[in-house]
Image 1 (cartoon, rainbow, N blue to C red):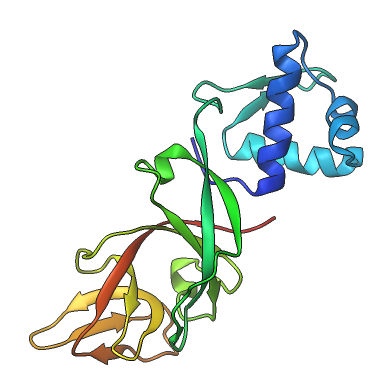
Image 2: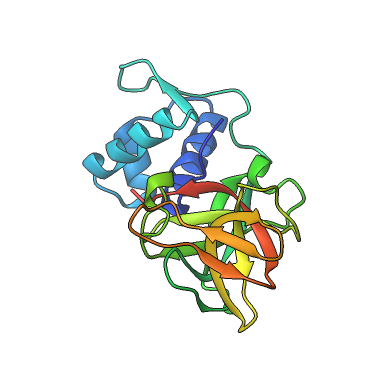
Length: 198
């Protein structure tokens, strides 16, 4: 079970659940009627939900079923706390901007948070400008893991973390960018999942 859902994908999935609870399988038109969405838009969301492993479709008008493990109780709202640099470090995130729905496996203790990525320093790890990274709050990461690193000046950046003899190397995943070296780095979390709004 898969990738996190955007808020609208979550609403589409909840609507499917609600209609199934009423005893019948919804059509695209049923879902669109509840949510005020055009059939083509509903179809796009169903394609994504099927690809992410939340539903299966039979190809018939009312042939939608939830896959096991589906939703009930399995989705949590994670706060988006701001932006994280995948490039030059930016000032620390503070404000809670919004929330995003993810399956509970991404926030097993209910403590995960999300940050919007700015910059292209992690593109070789398929983390692009505008993506949302789900972060598990931890104070240490293993060498080579992608961490949210806070530098001495309070700025934060998303990089692979490597401990060297007397310093920390924050390694971008972009051949055109140089690593950042720092004496003191505070780890604020580990990246556990990346999502792209579709």
